[in-house]
Length: 145
Image 1 (cartoon, rainbow, N blue to C red):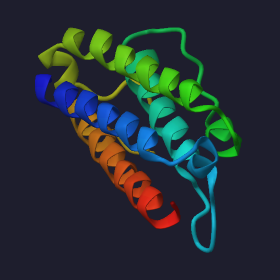
Image 2: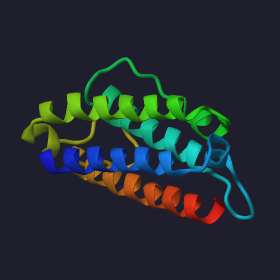
Image 3: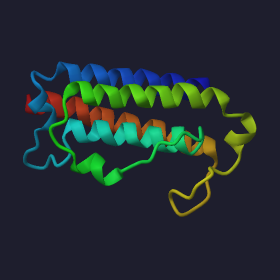
């Protein structure tokens, strides 16, 4: 479990660093051609994913996800995005150390993909999903700025 936590915290820090490399806040929200999801929306999506699937589902926090907002929001400030990153870090750091081996081997508590999966499988999926979108943020920054 420590490995998944370590990778997620590392990648959340990389997401923060990527956002800080944009020349200005408006660049975070640029779209164009085939790019429909700018870095700002990807950031909200990634942070919402972790706060929901790790924090709320496994950690029993009171976080309520608004997935539609993650992709509809526009123009949030860099400090607002950094707050979301920090909240996701807190969800990961406060939840994952408390997940037991038995929980990891058990079925994930909610149906996500329409078929059963272990909690460990889903945490690996969340980690890979995060890395995929983090790469998109990096490419977005380099392509559109």
